[in-house]
Amino acid sequence: MTTQVPLLINGEFIQSKSSETLPVLNPATQAVLAEVPLATEQEIETAVEGAKAAFELWRHTPVTERARLMLRYQHLLKEHQEEIAAILAEDTGKNLEDAMGDVWRGIEVVEHACNIPSLLMGETVENVARGVDTYSITQPLGVTLGITPFNFPAMIPLWMFPLATACGNAMILKPSEQVPLATVRLLELFQEAGAPAGIVQLIHGGKEQVNQLLTHPDIQATSFVGSVPVAKHVYQTATQQFKRAQCFAGAKNHMVVLPDADKDTVMNALVGATVGAAGQRCMAISVIVFVGETIQWANELAERLAAIKPNIWNHPDAAFGPLINQAAVTRVNKLIQSGIDQGANCMIDGRGIEVEGYPDGNWVGPTLFTGVTTNMDIYKEEIFGPVVSCINVDSLDEALTLVNENPYGNGTSIFTTSGVHARKYQHEVEVGQVGINLPIPVPLPFFSFTGWKGSFMGDLHAYGKQAVRFYTETKTVTASWKEASTQAPNMSISLK
Ligand code: NAD
Image 1 (cartoon, protein in one colour):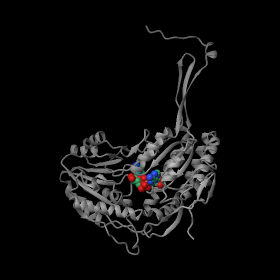
Image 2: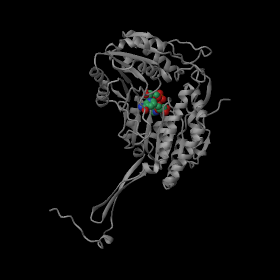
Image 3: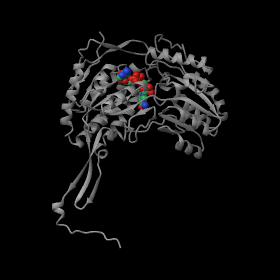
């Protein structure tokens, strides 16, 4: 019998009473790993009510105790890193190395949350008037909501609930219905670390469940990561209700290659950054902007990419895994066809690739186009597959114009040995995360994840450093101690 993925409500992992479920599939085999329920209205109501009650106690828990919870949790996550990686490799299909990285990047956020007392420190100014001091304190918001995508089932939930709860909030977590299994394990370990019942509640579902949560009067703030259309919907719905929202959305990341770059460094970087994780990363490089004669390097890149093969997650030679579902394969294949129809030169076509022993997998192999122009669908759309577009321009200025005119602004990189060119690119590019001779510049959590333009909706670029500002409200206190201060000499400064 197939197991049903549990909800977590008020500290108990329970079976949903919902009659609606969706299968959780292994994308390499289509084997049903579990059934995920679409939580009922009443279950969501109970979860929010429970989170609200838990918050009332949790907000008074000393910050040092909240930090110790994070320390214990970090330790447990490290102990179980490989086990969690194997769970999420089964339902995402990503290879073990990528899956280990997924968990590790989440552990780093928990490490950051261990430092919560320092992160919550306010500011003080003494004597804003005679005998009057002002200081600011940060306080939690209440019940918050986290909605996560399929492509990082450990890292992205861990972007959210550790920092939200370390700040003193409660959270309702709604992971992707396609990959809910790792989140269950993350929350089991959170409880084992000593998290009080109710401060994180786990709800499963899709659009209807998200909408009920977004409009719930007892939810104060929403963190969302996912595609652009859903991000817009979540942002509009949450903010229409005057709720705080941060929505991390889709991307189209460009890598600029200058003629003074080191060719081997460029090639080594491109192979993993383009087709790694089957291109299903919001920071994957999907457009290479070859400046001048470097376009010749596309031939070598084609040879290198053609040698790379996908496979099942635990196969030792798996460079990457399958796409998440059959619909994604159909969509990516259609976009590849559109590239051919619209006149791009398809140097490698990954459609129809076969993987021995896994005829039912959602396979798409590395695909490389040259001669791509900005009006083609393969340039305009976020493909989210192992498909790379090459564009040739004449100068760094032309490359900058191209990147800046793109509606997305999640990540970009430049490869050059010239400090002057690197400095110009860093200064003028309108993208939030810039790599110099590094293809995927994801910052560690003591910075923040800073997508720009269409890749982010909200006013605080949070998950790391600024997450504390997202999950708290600042209060300034101005205190007058006049009674006492009348005893003090009334000094004044005279300017001579
Ligand atoms: P998605 O938008 O389909 O789903 C994200 C979440 O929203 C899921 O939990 C899903 O259940 C929910 N959802 C789906 N449709 C909904 C609807 N109509 N109404 C309300 N909720 C809905 O995204 P995905 O396919 O799971 O993830 C891939 C996308 O996420 C890509 O576009 C990728 O670029 C983006 N992403 C962005 C970042 C970033 O930091 N900017 C990081 C990772 C992924």
